[in-house]
Length: 213
Image (cartoon, one colour):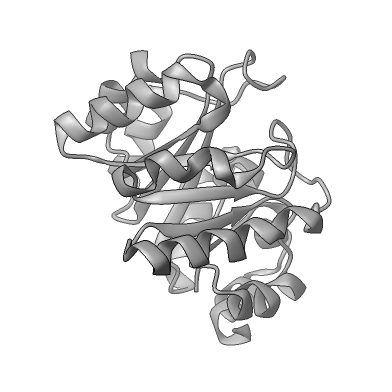
């Protein structure tokens, strides 16, 4: 299992240092939460910040678009340096358009699913995507407690992946703390997104996080 710190929980006045601490910990993925103030009741950052972060690091930029109209900006986010973009299945036709655009561009695309939504809605799209983000909080704000009841979706997706011979990765995002990591690993999660659970750790705790697994 890999860990993907979500930079939204970091200190943006020390952005370069925060990214360096992730690199020094041996972590290979940086999670970027883009919120538009419509799909979720919060704003974060957009294309220019993704572009700036790309210039700072060679980490994989796993970019989560919590947006009502992601398809309109998809190509620009890829051009800014996002390695994989994930949009929400709850956006309906926008999610379908995003998958089509990413396929045309030859880029990686994922789907995120909120806690109340059953994963069966993902079934028609699993062959066309590269990642599913299982949200274990209702998206919009960092620091929430994990909704562990949503984790049943991991087993559902693992079974479907094996049955159909697919290779999309399964990510869990929301309220993940260090003590959750062994459980998520044992469940078969591929990527654990950590926000405050990572950035509230002291430097030594960050550097030894992978050893905890």
